[in-house]
Image (cartoon, rainbow, N blue to C red; front, side, top):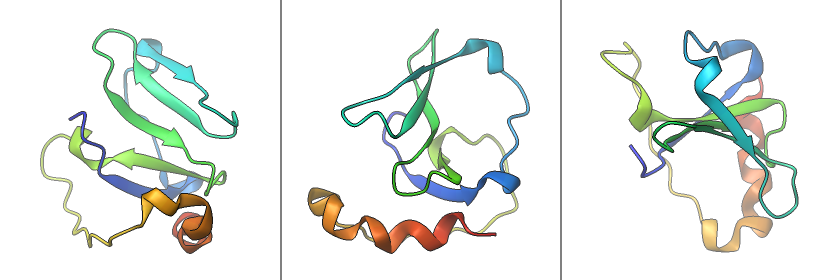
Length: 94
């Protein structure tokens, strides 16, 4: 669960069903992204990404059960994040 597999969705399509009381937030570096962590186990379940402030990046590895969804995995050059971040913006559009 700690290996993040990103699924970026629009805010309107995200709903946290339980556990709000167990979450804490942290902002790295620029402070633009808001990362949510479980205060008990430290797992990073989702965050508001700097590249998509109008959406959420969900850690697919934290989803339980059969979601009924099919995911397409796309490679992303995270080492050169600044040069490639704009390629992610369409993911949080409804």
